Image (cartoon, rainbow, N blue to C red; front, side, top):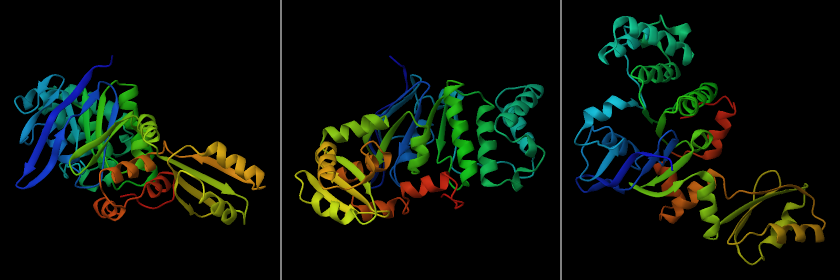
Length: 344
């Protein structure tokens, strides 16, 4: 059985009358990439601060590698590296000088710091900018330098807060690949918080869905999708030949188990149902001479999983959009695939 390296027990944080984190029971396994997924204000950053010993919980406990994060934060900091959502460096120092300084304050000699800084700048693809002052770096460059800075102390665990926020599509692809590499090749444990669904789906072994300070679901994307199907939630998309979608829509609306049925773009029908209708729908289309271009069960898509769990937690779509800044999974995907727009 894989060792649990990060664990919280009924972890709770209140600010006045507001409960930012509510009875959190979280387990992160050694060597995995675990994503805390939720809209802004869900409690992800507050959880991170308690794990780092930077704020005390109102009640409950948090442990990293068996160490109490509140009682012994110094020991926790020795094995944990933290990448905040907006990395700060000394602007008048070069990227290389910033890394060397980090190495020295973490107990390395100057020569050891220089050697490690050289290696890490190469690893994160920043050798070309090593001699530039950090004050002139773009956000993507600062994030890369931030990962190198975290690695200067060679941590077992890295906690990241919105690591890809505001980075262009190409930079996002490269950064997510690097994050995955830190787990797969180095064996480091990565805990990242994000509200960008597509990036989380690409790199995380497991995810935890956060809503209003509560962890409402945790597991791999396949596990969460199967759980929803066991609870009677299926999503099917069917693309037909031009002009046949209206006919299919009319027939589908009357099927037993169908919760909703709507026409999308490109003559595609989206069906939400309480049962698996694939066999029945296929038979119906053959009998009625409807040409199927694509037929896809989407219950395991993180987009569907996230929004369904959000509904189960009692949040409306409008509320979700307000809390998440209007972020949509497909927009994140389009940006990551090179649409040319900024993702933030």
